[in-house]
Image 1 (cartoon, each protein chain N blue to C red):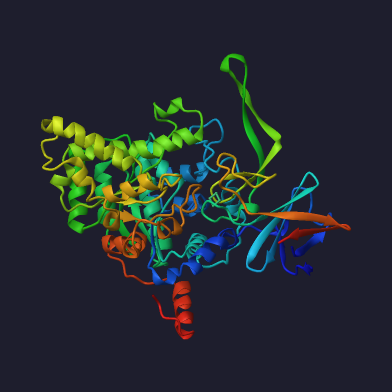
Image 2 (tube, chains in turn blue, brown; image 1 turned 45 degrees about the horizontal axis):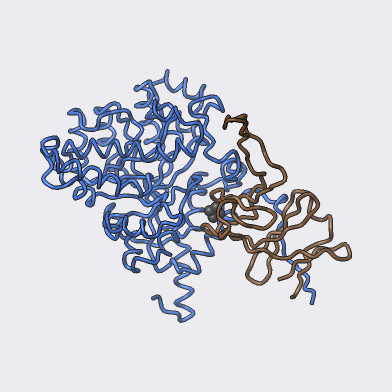
Length: 414
Length: 121
Ligand code: FES
């Protein structure tokens, strides 16, 4: 029997569109009835590169502003330290194609692009971070880091967070300058959509030094979490020994957070600021059991080295928050299950996609796990973030419409 | 097995892909070196549209005598389908993941007859 096909798509004739790229994700969202689950994505990104001209206008210092407008923020190319090939030399098509996506004149392009992927994935609220600007941490000119972080945060609050309640952010702290960090918390702590503050973990700084204590106290007082967002830099002396992206990324994205975590713990920060919540972002999960075992073992032999600690390091880690992506899922279900137990995942784990980056995770990475119950899944997908950031659990318009359609059709929500 | 007409031979350009909907399933028909291949447009990793990515040949580290790296090259005889979501690579010839053959794209037989291309579904 021959059946003639009527509808088809020719890829050569299509313009890139996030909604098309993610249509299979939308099918997952429908099949799994995500309209029954409030989903918060605690680590996602935009490419502020495209709005850099607007951001540069927010720089206070006229000399720096002129320089930023002249230099732009593009990365260097194959021979530069930043010339990595995260997109696997074009294989992850959304990187080179992003610029071709057509959006309406309003709202802001970054809002439209965010909402397009959020709706396809089934995400209600996303905590958004920049991309290249995370690497301000490695800028040797600390005044440039401070100037640009103020400009970016102002642009972000005015242009994105004020306008779109589904997008939140933890604002970039110029961690080389603790006093500037305090000014950022003062200036932006009350702005709409600001749910915390964030340190890029590739800062070569000692998070236990006295000048930082004022900042931690300010965050604790405001009940705002401090995130350590992983990254990598090929400028790191040990990582300079790697020659392939898989090595610099695989190691770099965990190493920088391991370093901050070790310093944070052995200097007794959880005892000095017991109500300050920390979130460890984008290092995946496999490093956490390693740190717990390693530090506990050494601590029991040399408690005098970390005299502020009243419990084992892992006991403090179990009270911290961790984002889920990139969740190491290849053939390791047992290890993953143990990891979930060790970190108290049902209350401490926060779903994150990291979209649009190359190693992004869909909500189904949590939703489809066989070893946790539905309540734990709902907590990880949104409930934990809702509590931590004090969010209104409002479903996206797309999911509200789906729910209404179901109700109209007489299908009760489970 | 029912056959579905995809198009006339030549309608898909060399290196091109046509995606057709058969019931609820989307199937990618790929033309490469004048041969046709058909796979379900769902990646076994996280469900990405595998047929909508690039086709790239296997990358090869060229090793000389004594284990010395001579450089890299492409093996054009082993073309891969690259899923655009995260980059999983599957052999174009059989749809199996290049490292784990248990991970595979669902494959459909392609029939060329009378100047037309069909897939058996
Ligand atoms: S969904 Fe295809 S590589 Fe991940």
